[in-house]
Amino acid sequence: MMGVLIFRLTKAEIQGCISHKQWLRGRTKIQNLMRLGVPEDLAVPCGASNKSYWRSEKTAAMHMALNNDFFSNMGLISLRDRWIEIHYP
Image (cartoon, rainbow, N blue to C red; front, top):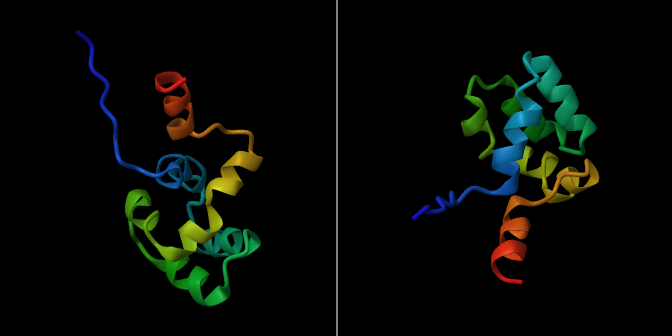
């Protein structure tokens, strides 16, 4: 019997790594965070840090920039919502 393994990760943690992994330089991270509406006092420490992609996802700046609305506007579906649709019709 096949089982389903469900991770307790938010949509921003999973799909956010895909998009902000392309921001290689600190200056690029800061500019893109500010472009997405993050205040400068939060964007600069987040962009200048050497945290890995998974660890930087847990910062307030990334939560502000890469929220659920951001991914919905990109046309991505919510993995959680899709799973609920399939298993609880």
